[in-house]
Amino acid sequence: MQVYHVYIDDLRFTFVDRAPVEELKERVVAANRAEGAFVSITQSSRPPSEVFVTNQTKVRIETASIPRDQGSPGGDEDDDAFWFDFDSLS
Image 1 (cartoon, rainbow, N blue to C red):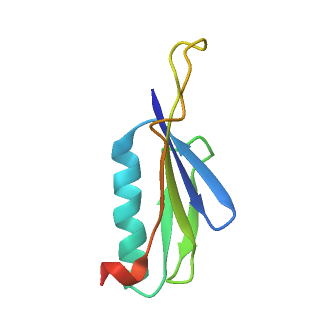
Image 2 (image 1 turned 60 degrees about the vertical axis):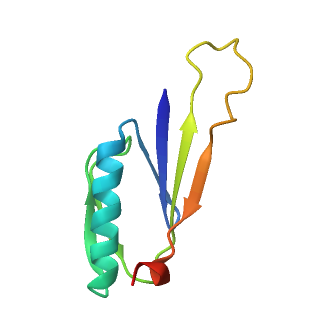
């Protein structure tokens, strides 16, 4: 099973489905291009909220694999993390 942790500045949102993460990424990029906007986050582990995103906002997305069997070794081998680089999106 995979989970997705999205860090926006000091806040962490956890998702269990890739689709809402992809939608959130699109809204974050749109907010950046609009020189700042509120981005709603509704499908995470936290209560629904809005976060103001600008080109100064730090956004990090991590993908983590959770082993289905607690006894299986090597659950971190497929971990994946990256930082949003707004300059490369122009």
